[in-house]
Image 1 (cartoon, rainbow, N blue to C red):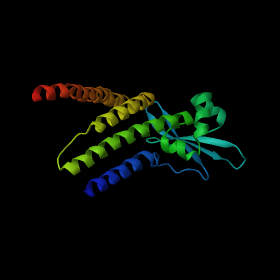
Image 2: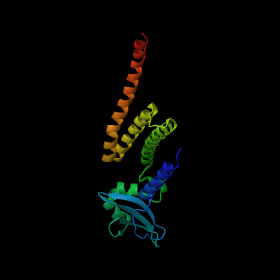
Image 3: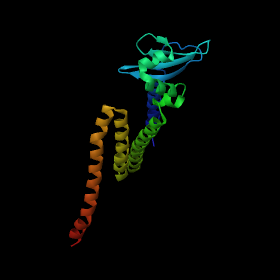
Image 4: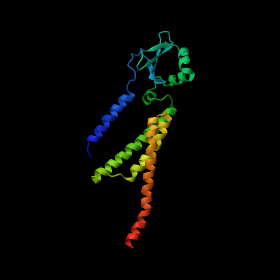
Length: 202
């Protein structure tokens, strides 16, 4: 098996991780500050929390394309984000897993696990197709490719629907139907095959 495609995959994965997990905001943080990702409408950035010398915690809103806003006291920020928004943001502060996965709760982590499972199935289908094709020295699409595609497509459809990601939902909608149709065609051909072979031998 060639090593160049594997190297290209690793390089592309590293680029994607750097874009997704890397710092979203270039503002300087206050000493000992904790941050959580924050989206308000089309604005993306971070909520920064830092303890003042008198023991109070103050917050700043650090958006990508705007100067820092604040500092705010908790009650002021609650008026901006609402009590639930402030509580969710507070749960995410300093939580590396929540920050890396861009979620605010453990329920969100469960959805992320489903998304990773779907991507794992998609990766598995391509590996199987690649290995089979390399062995036969020609492009081959084994049945397992379609089953892994169907399972991965359903998992990713559910994940993108939870994320309310219209691009992902549209991408998986046609795929799931096509994967299921290919599996049906394979099974129909198998059912017809014995009859064809019996007619040929007669």
